[in-house]
Length: 393
Ligand code: PLP
Image (cartoon, rainbow, N blue to C red):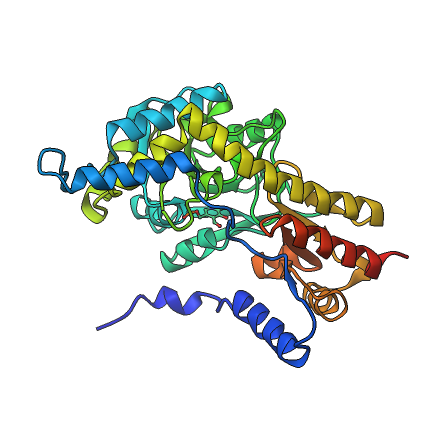
């Protein structure tokens, strides 16, 4: 018996354990000090009322013989797929309901999509990055190359035309940097993908945070239907991190290596996935109703205002950052040349504020720290006031 030895190549992830260890040690040594956690990656506001009502009425239907439902469709109920397609229309992107696969979230889908691709593909991933893309490809034994984000390109890594890739992961608005690709930049990626016969795996989990005319979908870009798959989620859009619902969009015409990609993904899901529960799909569809969209807007605005508050203090201090606008994340350059962990400790010890060291997201994160807008307003204001006091020259 042999295990999958590719797991030996995973880099142990100490990031959040190490943050918790250092934070708890500080709290134990300084019980009178109030520590504010600004590294929170989970939402904190509740799911919208319409979604709660839809969950309840969906559950009620399951309790009555006439409306009881057994296994859901692998690809999602038509009403949920149509609701997603309708949502895309709101920002001018046309996708067919048949192209939408409802799932239990973008983490599963971005992690599982590799099932349909061969192990000998070269995978291009931007750095810093959401770790799932890297780890799932290490598990599959694929060769990974990186496109570096940095201060010069505003953490919007662009393709190196001299390098070939078969699979490309892009995330915009980005976790962890909050950076957002422009339509022009995404067009460059689409052209590169088509030239390389590659597929872009586009993670738009944070699209709902976009407030300007930046693209909210890769399918807003000409040519993308021939080279892209999109993953999105209600986790950050509507507070579904615990409720679990996402969706993946695969254009019907997308083909590679003599195979239709939509059909392959259907086959994969039909084999390994038994669908999302009926009440959760009811709740997801409710989020995309007019009432639902109005309700999620309130929560998104709350986080956006927190992000604006953080960003304005960094502006005042003259600290370079990306994000803060179009994203719940603020990615800042550690002042005075400090390293990520050095600055983490400095903020914890001197301002009792906890961030996330950038190097936990890849080598290009060294010297950066991520703050998030998911704490409450009072704490966010208090945290940035303390940072201002500490760092003001
Ligand atoms: N994609 C990105 C870029 C994320 O940051 C996250 C969560 O933090 C996810 C996907 C996970 O989404 P879900 O909760 O739908 O699995």
